[in-house]
Length: 149
Image 1 (cartoon, rainbow, N blue to C red):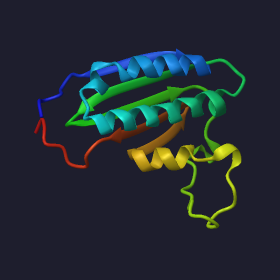
Image 2: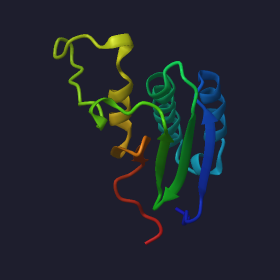
Image 3: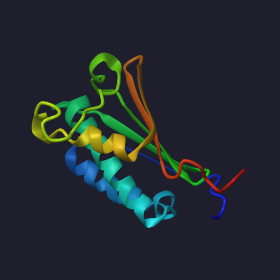
């Protein structure tokens, strides 16, 4: 695997469903994501779609705002940072893990599979809210990379 130092992408989009669609097309076509293995490219698209749609729907609701997406390849893994200035997550923390086995938990609102999908695909998932800024970070890719010692 070639060394991936310096490969990064950054985009700012308005908080709107159509803008998410356009941003996803741009991000998926970026050299950062195109350099990933096929499975990781697909997972990156799903993961980014879930996170960005959550920002639009929950952080901003009907309000307007911006979402900043930063991607970088680090040691063969995709590092992502999503920043918005909308409403913070409940309790200013990531939603709790849910057991989605049949009958294990009460029904989820409006599908409710976004966070379980995000948790299944992302590594090192972290959230913080400071001074009105929401920052979600995560990685995608192998636990141990073979590149860039």
